[in-house]
Length: 415
Image (cartoon, rainbow, N blue to C red; front, side, top):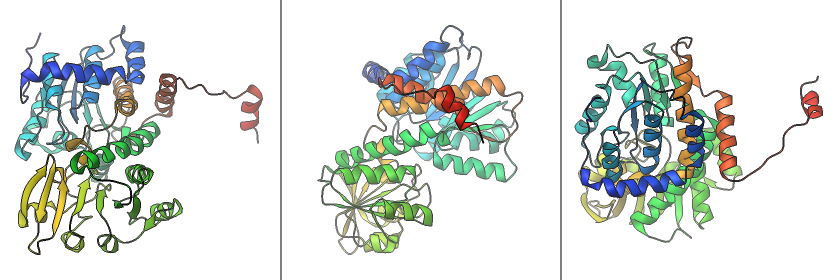
């Protein structure tokens, strides 16, 4: 048996990590159902899976599920600031090759991804495409024999699509992010709730009556806007897509350009996966005391170079930096512009991640079973997997539904 390899902040945190893992697993019944169906057959026996995900208590359930089904698992963080150090320590004691700790430098973050790839995984599970990009373009891994990969987040999907458009894709990639049971629950309900959690933990200010600017009205933006409005906020939406802007308007939100919203907002949340959506000009136009945070994966949505490099900065609360401009105006930045709901809070609730990770696990098994006939392109998650996850989710919530009658099936299929 190969020796355990890991690099974590403090292995002594493992006991606390075990308690957090058990709490998450107790509330991820959907994933348990998938594991129960497959436990005896151990379909991942002999397979090495490399995972680049946020190392949280919820993720620990997926990693140990893959191990329970026979896989050798190597894992690193999907973001330099998103690791829960007690969970990383616990995973290391459970035989996972884990390379993750919170507060990594960019160099350390890249080294950890390389450490996972050095285990020569045949299947990659990614959140943001950093691992997939390294596997494609770092010459150290030219000989890596990957039979397939998955991608979990919108920003990562955009990057891997760019690789495909450039004709550089080396293996099939399943777009787990676009499974309906993923983006409906994870992006909308998960990010919606965890973003509010981050605002409350970092600032502990009243949400009701605040003008909250939600930048982007995709699935994430819809969730954030809905949850903030539910707490009494006056929500403003900014968009570049006319269809999404129309939807936000019809949903009852004020819709306007960012240049106008910057002058009005008390709190700002970027949800786009794009770069430069809150610029220096927007920051300069904001009110004194405005709070800005990002939940769009990468730390490029807000001009953090200006806030952290040209302002007088001090941490006034855990995860909240006060940035004082030359004009003496203050803007508060959550989590240095990285994922606020993971840096300043704990990420998505376990019930939500159970659905996302059930999609991931079933997609891994789909790749393993079908890779010999799969083309080198991007694949949507099959409807059969989406439906299976939805049925497991309903069962876990004790919800029963009707079935079509034979008469209805005949009627539906008749012209």
